[in-house]
Amino acid sequence: MSIVADTNWRALAQSLKPRNQAFINGQFVDAVSAQTFPSYNPANGQKITDIAACDAADVDRAVTAARRAFESGVWRDLKPLERKTILLRWVALIREHQRELALLETLDTGKPIKESVNVDVASCAAGLQWYAECIDKLYDEIAPNGPSSLVLVTREPIGVVAAVIPWNYPLIIGSWKIGPALAAGNSVILKPAEQASLSSLKLAELAQQAGIPEGVFNVLPGLGHQAGQAIGLHPDIDAVVFTGSTEVGRKFLEYSARSNLKRVGLELGGKSPHIVTEEADLEKAAMYVAYAIWYNQGETCNAGSRLIVQRGVKAKLLKLLEPWAERLAPGDPLDPTTEMGALISAEHCQRVRQYIELGQQEGAILAIGGRQLRPESGGWYIGPTVLDRVQNDMQVAREEIFGPVLVVIEYDDLEEAIALANDSEYGLAAAVWCRDISKAHLAARRLRAGTVWINAFDHTSINAPFGGYKQSGNGRDKSLHAFDKVTELKTTWLELH
Ligand code: NAP
Ligand code: MG
Image (spheres, rainbow, N blue to C red):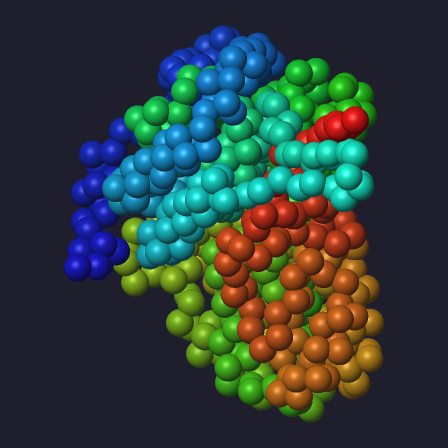
């Protein structure tokens, strides 16, 4: 049976009662101030619920609980096998509740239910499982220092880790932060984005059922300038692991400098170049170009948003994109066949429309889409859009639109393509399409991006690091390298005689 096709999602949505309180020290509680903020369904513009709006007082409570749990050793001093077993129980519960989690993610973010089930919930469970399984397989080091010294290099949890995440992939990005932090033995405070808190609160409920001790995992919904800022400035948080915009990432560095110099790991924005040469398999490239920009409504940090295409094949490639644009036309996110859903909010939809306007004022030609769709739904939909004849110095080529808008830039030789690709403040991802693998690989070496795909886009796995060069951030999520953000290395030097 197919869970996506065989579930009556609308009926399930009717009976759903999303959690809307904060989760602190093992309990669901209102904010100290009793304030709330509304959460909307982007598919129809209707309010889902009012959620506890945590601020500095709640952050303080959560940090106190998290610190107490950390110092008590109730989590970090468990035998590795025991910590692993509890996390794997959590993973099993996430899989058991996949329908509800997927539905919460779709109602909150507007993304298609098919993707929420098959990608978001599945990747969250797989990611947490991978880190749980690492726990009893990671060994420390002995530095070679001759017969009379024993020099141990051990990894220790850093302490209290706050994860601050965006609204586009709450479950997936959440798992990239929570997985390594909890596996390493830290206490964790998760702050979801105000537009999409519901799946994080469900994760908290399941964490409690799995037996994660109180205070070890906390979820604080709230607004960025309240809960987020209080986290950034708190003197007793040891590390913040952040994913979001470059603008807010910059703020977290300032908060750190103004408070306790807490460690700040940043996964930020992107304007990823997708280079298509005349030596590419154009049919295949077209499909990847389409999904690279239109998957998740274009609300993806590493979206392939700049198509850099060799002049001789541009017309053919754009023609090949047309059927994909039709196929990916937005629909009701709860319909199991929908491949593109709604944009996160009315403001964001307006912002994307303004960029489409701006591009045309700058001299670009609207080749596909560009209009707001499905107005009768009350939701916020824009279809697959292509702006042709873009120059790399236009605002639409430099700034992250974070919507389904592809900008098309032409080039003549590969040197020029690489220069255009690297001419960006960002460096999160890039791709090259070229059947000549040596040529493609030489280009890949010179692209300044954390991930470079050759003859693919967006192929990922939890064991491959992910993160950015330049203003796309620092440090890496995923893979064993993610432990660097949430652990300290200790050198213990022992003289034997
Ligand atoms: P955002 O506005 O930067 O928000 C991210 C998080 O920071 C949210 O939890 C937000 O809370 C909080 N925040 C906002 N203002 C804050 C402040 N003044 N102080 C402390 N915290 C604050 O980003 P977004 O709009 O949610 O997501 C879109 C951005 O994320 C894009 O730029 C995208 O490229 C980036 N992104 C990057 C990656 C990656 O891995 N590199 C992945 C996904 C997304 P509120 O929700 O309450 O504002
Ligand atoms: Mg919402």
